[in-house]
Length: 398
Ligand SMILES: Cc1ncc(COP(=O)(O)O)c(C=O)c1O
Image (tube, rainbow, N blue to C red; front, side):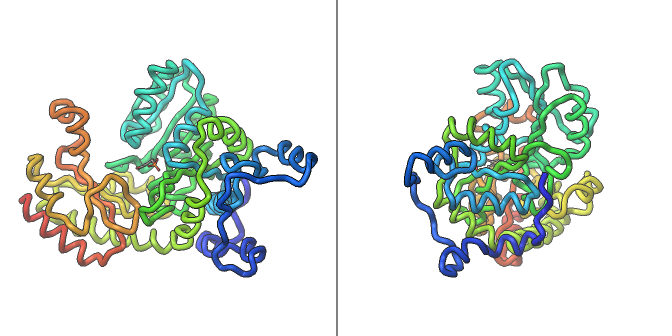
């Protein structure tokens, strides 16, 4: 792994020094909005073909605007190399496929992001004979207990989706190494600013850049970080052949977003903490799930492996009555109803909506997800307005 950059993250994200010098002092670099790069002669194109992971030949492989953002992201994550994808799922599926072959076994966490889970259960299983064991993942012996001779990948998401359980990254990385198993983590929630999995020994780090990295709900993007040899191989195989490279305009938008990432994250966290503390005392709420709360069950581990928290929290309403959960969600206005998170706007989502549709009432009851669970993505609005709105909506469920 390369040494962390000598500049601190906020400074690195704020300036595009090289592009500034090359582009007449333009404070925002222009976009290479082209699919193709041509060459003056045979020798020049031959030279480019000899470095396929680095050369800009065709934008499905490399594009200078995309490369510029990749270098910036590798710098803040302490990674040798970064590659940007058309979506978070593009990065996740390529990372997983790079680690497993037909007949292999994966160990992962029960609460990973739904489509990543479906990729393992509904695609890798039936099409490739790759089996997956889902565990809670809060203790290292749970991993030890399910490792098989054909286990080739441990796939983590810490904090995990919806209820934010953590895995001990350094301990899992050590265990995996002793068994020759690759490790991948979805680090979307913490972002590279608040958690550094590669420094703890994890092999590959994936992100949905559609969340905090993008931050304005106007782009869909994925990021993969790791060693140069791994990333170069993936970029020339899974990424190139499945065609999931990020487009230059998306990269340019992402570059715009990254300039304010440290400031946005600070405010998301501050506001989420204020609301988590308020909701924790509210009679309309049975339980608050937020990694920043002093009462968070894995407080010591969170303090050891994370540098900060996020704007994402979940609450369990004091009722399991679906009509009241619906009334609570419908009473919100500033919190828009939608599936994503990490943007400037506050969002609400109740897993009950999709789970009831996909699983049916009986299966949902057995899944262990509380019927009254509601996820809140705390945005950048005035926090007092957000608190007042939550208080009024909670009165409808009491
Ligand atoms: C934790 C997590 N990982 C990955 C993804 C997938 O990212 P994308 O929507 O950019 O494909 C999401 C999207 O919601 C997510 O929440």
